[in-house]
Length: 157
Image 1: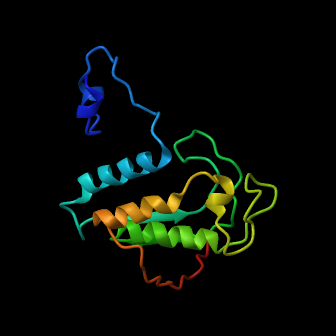
Image 2: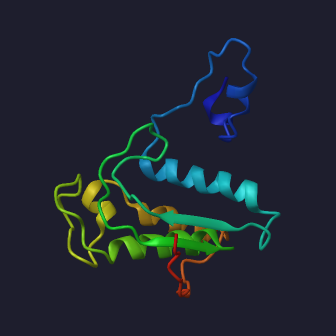
Image 3: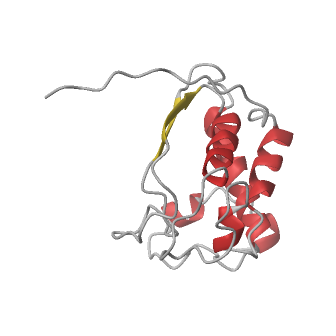
């Protein structure tokens, strides 16, 4: 295989009969974030306005949700967001998390005040906004959003 021919599609990993081709985890964070957005564009490019994105902003912790365990939440539960724009919903979600006070006694030791960047407080070397900037530049969506709050009624059991 020639690395310079790689387009990042992972077809070689899927098709390799011996399993000798593996994921290259040695990428820089910005390149990794850009590839995620490019793959997302590949999935969504023919589905504009036909996909719905739902973010549950609950139990936000320092761990990836792909792990089989979770650390303590870093902010109080915020709620649920829905949008047809994947970039707008992620920007709104991040803004809502960052607008909260961080919870003491959690993995979040920096940026606990409302308005401070909780994600940079957890991972100072990761520029999470680069992902959204890049996604917007690809035409995946728009970082600008309008937040519409819905009134809910408490359920009685």
